[in-house]
Image (cartoon, rainbow, N blue to C red; front, side, top):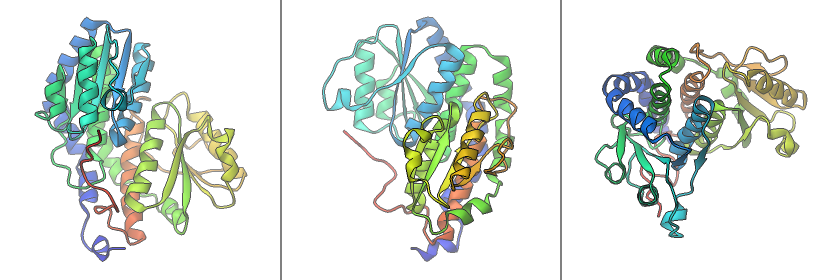
Length: 347
């Protein structure tokens, strides 16, 4: 407990509300690097894309995986950095692109995996908030996500700007005019999302010790990020699952009042996510879902973007605003998570 968290605005609160400006800055000042990376990707004509990341950056990579697979028809694989840093494997990467995502660009294992990928023939791209970092220096190309200083230990601005930079890369790679236009509207929509309030959800979480977060497709990345933030910011245990997997075993621990948050975008998976939320509600869960298509689960208000690939992004901004408030509700300072520091350098 920390009384400081109950008095003045937290850095996390301030940074969540800076997300729209950070995305606007990225779109204004980072577009050249994104377009260069898209041209390089076209020239490679890859047969596979690999991602290298940890923590929130890995959730941005999961978002990118779905967007890239849906738009490009290319498989995207996450590579564990320890393959290079601990086990010393040398990977063959001809006609491959390796995307490394790290807000600091300093973690030795991420840097080593990028080096090994480049040595194996990959074209390497760093997505980072520090354009002069070791990761950027190791990679062929760098996208500066332009988030600005992020003081809160919990990554918020850097997650969203990483995700926006990656979906923008795909928009330019495929020359998708509709997606490009929709991305330009994001700052205003994210500003609206930051003002969303989910008080019924916060109330349902009080006194709970565990919950599920669910999603499918690109929104699965949001479920993963939300579960991490619950643990990181409010010391509440959360597990993330694809809505397609939760009934295959995890549902066994659901009992009366067990909280479930299902993140549904306005895409082809929305109906199935809403249906799973309803089924869990029928089993006694206190289920919430970001879709008006639910019959039994509680519906959370959301901001829609008009493009199915972008709908997950306002969801995470609204979630960030909610979880910061929830941490304060239970007397925890969201800026000082227990046992954590801003930059974790794993080997």
